[in-house]
View (tube, rainbow, N blue to C red):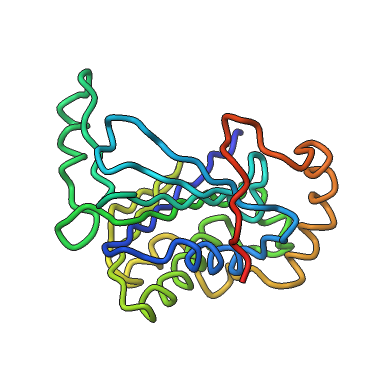
Length: 214
């Protein structure tokens, strides 16, 4: 049976320091410095305010793939395509955060082989619940409004505020990324990934982000 990925989205309702947000996400994921962030920019007319993105390099999905997007000149307003269905047009009108378009969005895709890596009974949904809870605490500390959504093969939770519905996704208490788990990830995957990535992004990925370290 093919295991499907779980897509998580955390929408943030006010402008956020994207580098501080990136550092916190990388800290939670245990991302090594040798896996640098990649920055790209979308000039699509579908995003009238512009749309920038920072992400893990391609194929670094451990313990989760990461991407952070934000509006350059305002909220992340997305316009429907000419061939959009009525359902898609309605979905674009949905207000992800406090009756307005999100200023930024964090997208996480937990690795499907997480139970094997974690060497526990924790599922990718438990990892997702932990990541949302911990990032939510960081956002609360910055007094930033946020909502989260989960969409996977066996779960769909529409945008929810706070941590009240996290138990519907998974058990955050068993989903933590521990230093021991990070060490296993790096030992098992890092050298092979570095050989394949060759130290630079492909042009379609974007460019290496500068000045992201403290």
